[in-house]
Length: 116
Length: 116
Image (cartoon, rainbow over all chains, first blue to last red; front, side, top):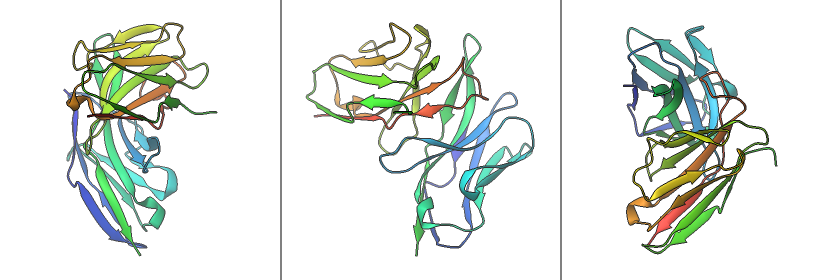
């Protein structure tokens, strides 16, 4: 079965400093991995996805993530945090279920706070 | 609008009442998902439609939950005899074709259900 573990429920950084949001996954086959962001009272937005191409994936708003199979990790990073990055971030793995269709399996989320 | 629309935005129900939550996917989108997001948790899969066919309902937590998409567009999630543990944000998402990990998934802003 597929699953994801987000290692930090809350992360707090100062504006202009690097961001690191950690995610480990468990999958019995080559997974597809995603990061989604959820701003208050807004819908989930896809930041980036990994689907077995390049291991370093660049997303929107300056975020990127690196797929490391040996470590079963897919950490999200950004060199310099902006106030507008404050939100809830979800690491997601694509699971499988009967019939050959995929569903998304979400981690519990990491709330990112950015201080001036 | 161009996005996935969900209504109502907020719903308060007394325990034991029935509720109906509506999802208007992006026009022409074939795939439609329902997710349940409890407070402080990541979204959890409820059910998946491809056009009008409900191909997977393995995530529905009990037989009080029922979803339909009779004409392959608008979907309704119905919860009968609501319980306090049903309090959550219910998210709808759609994508253009038969969904795969390469297909962009568009989320609505959700319906926040509070059962008192």
